[in-house]
Image: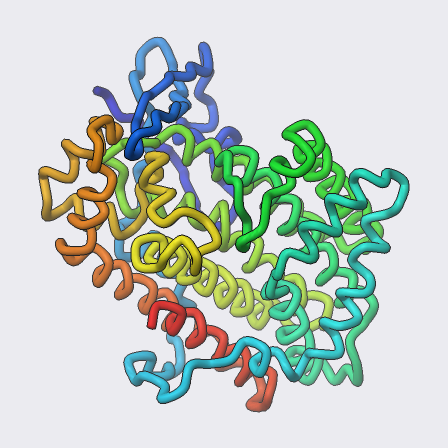
Length: 418
């Protein structure tokens, strides 16, 4: 089957194809073809939908980097300073509540404001918002906004956060929440953080509209910030969400998926929002472009590391710990870092995956192969590599509680596997 290289692909700088289907930007599409795939998990039989972006002369599109793999997603700023030793294990796991203690007041104010900025025009949408905002979220993204805001405010000589800093944190959490609602609909997930999802409680129609409304409301507040750099930055994130979903749907059960492709998709779905959050905070502090870029690189690499760890946990934690069925990504044909690494060593894993788990017990067998082949260990090394890059980009910040919290959050992410 022919592959097609994306030309002039500059990853993480928005020069990516509009449909994120791995075709060059001037490609014309004859159709979007949906292909049903049948797979079983135990006694139940599910339908997997594969999105294939087709042209008359191309079977399945591929994303191939125009850069060498080692530099494609490095995210390193030239001549980085010394980094923390992430190989040294902490004697005590980092407590997230303690980690965010330095911005606890900021987060408390954010929690009070979230429902009010969603608006009360529609009681059903308000009820859906209350469900998702109250589902045990850690407010990780707005906390990162506040930490970077306060650290960079010291550089700029600001005495306190601006109203733009606070509004940015609220916008980021709304966008994240909207993306979760839509993700659950697309993934047909029944649980989120151990609680029923919005579409389970209110139906798919309400869930889609609730997500759309939050995206629209956040966009309105974003426009009112009247900062074109931040508006462009956050608007790109919303586009990236859609691009990531399309890329994921187009590669289900595809055992030829490459690590670079996985990292691009992970950027779209996870790291893009975190990178925009941290850079936007720096922009509103008024620091120089180099510092803002380093905050972007911190957020990008933290986001990639976070997604890799999430994908490891899908194999190592129980359904109770995850708040969703274990191995759910693999069951749906979404091949993540542990699987990609395992496929390099175990040819039989390809056969199991390409059969789409039609045999009873085949999903459990595939999970065991991933665990025994070193896929999880290699994925952990990838997560540590991205974590190290994140740490490097914090060296421009003044020493103090905010920079320390940002560093400790990187450690916390890795220690989730412990």
